[in-house]
Length: 211
Image 1 (cartoon, one colour):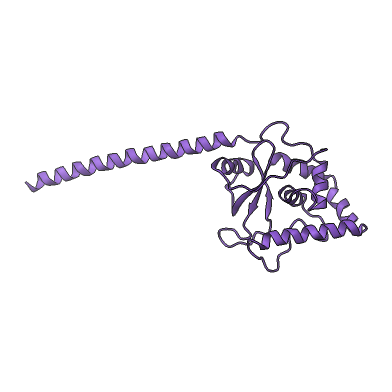
Image 2 (spheres, helix red, strand yellow):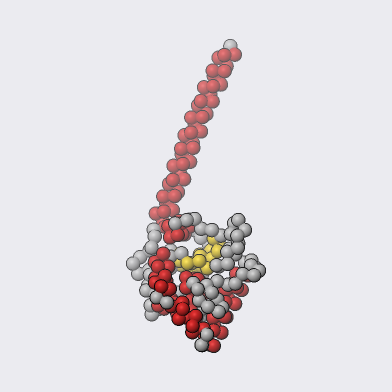
């Protein structure tokens, strides 16, 4: 693409964001802290995750790409050998290698500001190689252009994944979820009413027996 999507400010996830995440990845979010980047279509496409999940498991990937269209396009780049070419260039281009190491330091600094993971590298193969373009693109989208040179390069190779509209319809999902919760609550209320009625009947029967 000629122009990458603009950087967006981190925001607290809404019910619609969480519903979109569930549709995008097919599971609930884990360790979700914020929406690190929002796609031009309005959906989240990168989330910031806690360095440790709720059960204490270390999770070094701070920026997690969620958009299935972007992820699919990145997978095509990986299959075409882009990672291998980028890694080879790191060994022959000192300026690129220095910028990529700076990206590695930026990633760790951002993660350490939340919680330090002793003994864990940054992510995506940084600082010496490229082993996951999804991580590098997620970093570039969250941090903005000029921070991760190879993430920026990968984005430039991608199509505008939002041009066909949202990849999922989170508002409908959130509304459906709220409707299910309401129906469930209503059912509980009916059940409670029935229990109360039965309880009154039992009390009446007990009183009749006492007579």
